[in-house]
Length: 241
Image (cartoon, rainbow, N blue to C red; front, side, top):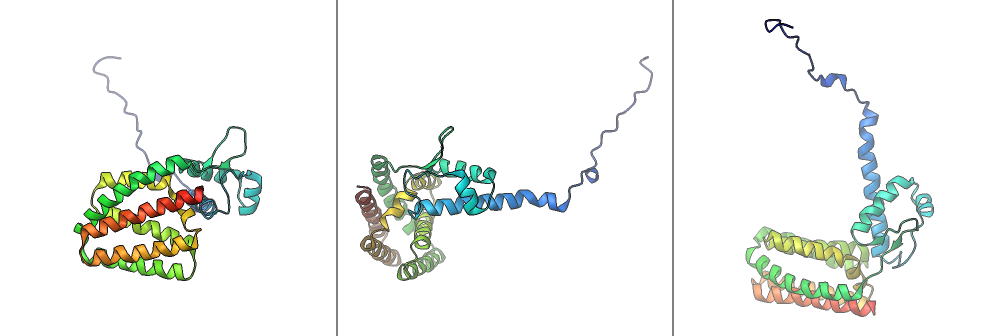
């Protein structure tokens, strides 16, 4: 071909209209994700509530029949729960509920006591009137859940309150470290509420540190929050023993 000969252009424009997906097909990933989320939440709740004890086997066929699902979404849920440290996946063997490592839990609580004091002091100094009002509403609901003996719902809200206080400290590094450690002791903390006396003590401690927050006593709030975490840790370790 001579240098003066014209070149033929290839027409490769992408035309989105040619890519046709049925409405039913496009909705499947959302439905599947919803089912996956529900499975994760349900099995997690069964473990945290003690319905599935440490070391208990998790036979796929039985769980699939119980929840009316196939093995694929169940196995995906298992991967999430394994990442959270709640179950152990074993090659060619039935998954089991992960045991709780007492020594590791003790060390984590030692760190969380210090983190909560730091977070509490910073949060008390930074919290706005709206922030405190929001915490008040959460605390009022927490008290009602305790009176109604709704332990599982209480536990989830309790974690949200602690998370919100840590977030209000305004330190992203502290919050990230706290969140990682909190996930590690998530199930162990739930154990403390099995003791009715400790559960009532915990509610009273929440009321005490909320009063200090209202009083503008940052040091007192930080100390009370830290002590609350220490007592929770001691209770958890006692229950594990």
